[in-house]
Each structure stands twice: as C-alpha cells, then as structure tokens.
Amino acid sequence: MQLFAFGVNHHTAPLDIREHVAFTEESMQHALHDLVGHQLVKEAAIISTCNRTEIYCNTDTPDKAVGWLADFHHLRSGDLEPYLYKLLREQAVKHAFRVASGLDSMVLGEAQILGQMKNAVKSAEQAGTLGLLLHKMFQHTFFVAKEVRTSTEIGTCSVSMAAAAARLAERIFGNISEQKVLFIGAGEMIELCAAHFVARHPMHITVANRTVERAEALSRRFNAHPISLGELPDQLALHDIVVTSTASPLPILGKGMLERAVKLRKHRPIFIVDLAVPRDVEPEVAELDDVFLYYVDDLADIVREGLDSRQGAVTQAETIIDSNVMDFMHWVATRQAVPTIRALRDQAEKFRQHELSRAHKLLAKGENPAEVLESLSSGLTNKFLHFPSSVLNQATNDEREQLVEFVNRLYQLRHPQ
Image 1: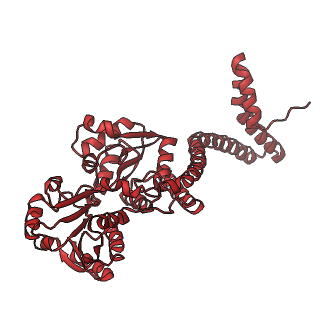
Image 2: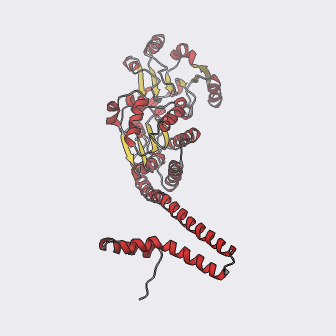
Image 3: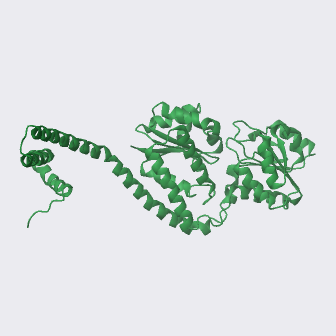
C-alpha cells in the first residue's frame, strides 16, 4: 500500500491552469472509473474546488497516475508539471489533514473545504473507488479537522470568500443599499454570498439559475426574484452588482453580452465577482472600461485580513496534525504486517489440521487416548518450533545475535539468571 496525493492549488497554479484541470460534478464518476479502470491506482478520490484539484490514491505507480490527470484533460504533461505537487505516504496524510482543517485554504480556517472533502469521499464511495486505506485516511482526516476546530481558534475572524465579495462591493459603491444585485447560480457558494449581501440591504436581488426551481427556492429565502439563465441578456443591464458561481464548463457571460449591458446602462459601472472554476466570465470582459471584474484569486488580499490574530491557532493546529499523522502512519505500518500474520496463521492451521487428522486415525485404531494426546501435543510443538530452530542453527555469526533477540521478543522468553 502506498498513499499518494497530487494536484494543483491556489498556491502553485494560476486560475487559468486550475480551471483546465477542474472536474465537474457530472464528470466525477467517469473520471474515477477511468483512473481505477486503467489499473493505474487501486483506490482514488478526487477533490475539485475553485482553489484546488487534488487526487488522493493508493498506487504503486505514482508517475502513471500523474500522467493520467494531464491525459484526461487533454493537456501535455509538460504544461502541467511545473504547477503540480506530489506527496507520498505521510506527506500525503499531513496534506489531507491540513486541507480539511482549513490551514491550506486561501481563507485560513474556512470551514467550507471540509464539506467539499466529504462530498469527494461520498463520490468515491458511490463510484466504488474508495478502499480500506483511503477510507481509513479520510475518516481520520475528518476526526483531525474536528479536533482542530474545537481545540483551537483557527476559524476565529475568518473572512470567507462570500464575505470578501460583499466587502469589495462596498469598497466600490460605498453603500450597496441603493444597488441591484444579481446572483448567477444557486449552489452553496451563492447561498453564502446572498446571506452576506442581504445583510447589507441592497435595493433588489435577482437569482438566475439553469434550473428555475432551484432559483425559486433560494429566492424565497432571500426575498429575491428568480429567473432562468436564458433571461440573462435582458436582465443583466438592470443590475449593478453580479456575483456568479456555477458548475458550467463554459463561460456564461461573454464580452459581447457585457458590451450590450454597459451600453444600455449608459456606461454606469457594473461590478462582477466570478467565484467559479472554470470561470463563468470570459477574461476579455476585463478589457471593458465600465466593468469591474474580479476572479476568485483577486480576493486574496481581503481574505487575508485578520491573519495575524490566527497565527497562534495555526501553531496549535499544526501540533495536533503532526501527532495524528504519526498515529495514522503507525496504523499503516501495522497493516503492512497483515499478509505475514495471515500466512503465519494459515501455516499454523495446516499444522493443526495435520496433527488432528493423525490423532483421529490413531483413535480409530483403538490406540490409548492418553498416548494419542501426548503424540498430538508433541507433533504440534515440533512443527511450530522446527523452522525457528532451524533458522537459528543455520544463521551466520552476524545474523545470530539479531535473530536471538527477535526470537526472545516474539516468544517472550525469559532466560534463567
């Protein structure tokens, strides 16, 4: 068994690379089956968010697993290689613990990543690609994340991406109570953003989604107006602030649509935050004079606010994580002895069956039961001790001392003084 984790995140790769290797919800099952189906790995789970795409696996061929990621997304390995991190064994475990605890997030201490990891594990379970090793690792990961969040103040003063979007809007407009806000999408991120914007009492809120029913459900919570994505070309110009986060593999807002909206608005500025990966807004939109476009990476400075107050909690969290990495790797080491233990028990069972069969035959011939029992116990003892005794007798001088120490430890021998 060899744990291996690899991928890209906001620390190692720019947004245009991350969106190229992102997995949609629809493609996740196919990707997992493809990775395991090619027998590149024995187990696999994929985490794909706006800030990271990571693959955790049990494999004997890490390089082939890395090559699969580029092939699946039709990229050249050389184009992806500079941005990849590759983590083996305890490094992979520590990384998983840190990610789940919010230590590796753009927003230090944010809790959303834990839910995203749990969803990734659920997808792997549904795909049948989660075996004993990864299952145990992720269960330990969730335990560690809970311990970090309950034992430290890592989440204190955490500024979420949703809160950062609202703060940025206030910096541009001053007071957003006179602004009209459009949310595109109806997932968890949009729900979080809506809560922050509603607290600032904007003039009007609209929710656009591919499935109108989901837009309606979210609209009822925030007293908003639901529309379909097909209505965006007509509705866009009516809004001052746009926050978008969908799972669309292609941009939803193009330069042409924004040019028309700006013209209809008579060049009144429009503020857009695109929190999706892949991006919902074409990069060319940033060229328009009256559009303030921000992607997820642009919010980094805002979400770092309050970081100094959480550094003590980071030190505490790292200590908890290091201790749990040691515990988990000990469990992995014990699992590596399982085949040997199983083989030892199988051999002992063969000895037992052989001597028992011999004893039954002797009893059937009318032999004395006491003598049969004596022969049975003597035969078992001789079989169990034959191989250890033989190895000790045949050992070289260099081997014998270490072997004697091992035998004493294995059989708990106490020599008379």
